[in-house]
Amino acid sequence: MISQGQIPLRHELPALLRGEPMRVLQEPEARRWAYYCLWIVIGAGCFGAAMGSWRSPLQALFTAVKLPLIVLLTTVGNGLLNAMLAPLLGASLTFRQSLLAVFMSFTMAAAILGAFSPLLAFLVWNTPPHTTGGGTAFTGHSLILVTQAAVIALAGIAANVRLLQVLRGFCGDKSAASRVLLSWLGGNLLLGSQLSWILRPFVGSPHLPVEFLRADPMQGNFFESIFRAVTRLLFP
Image (cartoon, rainbow, N blue to C red; front, side, top):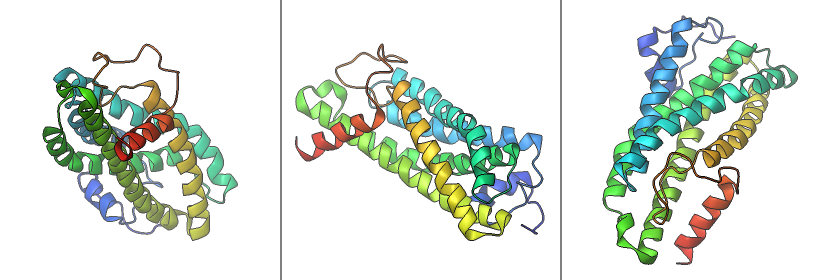
């Protein structure tokens, strides 16, 4: 179990990003939920705005709303599953502690995405606009789509490396903490990727109108779209 004193809330995000062990799983506070949600909205919202700005300011606004929404829905949606898996894999985490741990992970990921948002905005600024027409516009769309997927994956990996350190400190068993984290990652990946597909568009296809949701949200899946984008970049 973690023995260090609880870190003040205002210092918690820097401590999370540094991977310092804390007692937040043993001593959850109501205001901590609002603190995590605020950082998720700010970080993921800024990244979403940069992503959608390639298509139009309206698409930037839509994406800035939808990306934090996906993060929050994925966290809550997997909360019960994570709480059931943790005891089966050797970690005695309650539902509240499991949900808080996942919130911690997504808060770190959102903070990293927020830090990357100026770089993504710079890439968007230097990418041929959607009005270019022809194959150039689709190449620009694919470049932004693949880049944002890579940055989100990087932020997720970094956040879960930190979460693993916290889980190890709480569980006292490295193998159990690793098993719990891997099971959580699987659920988060499946639910998060499908939610992102249902709530598309985020970048905004050059040949389709700007809209909050597509008319066929359940057709296809996230992995197909990434495969098509990578294929378009490698074989223009």
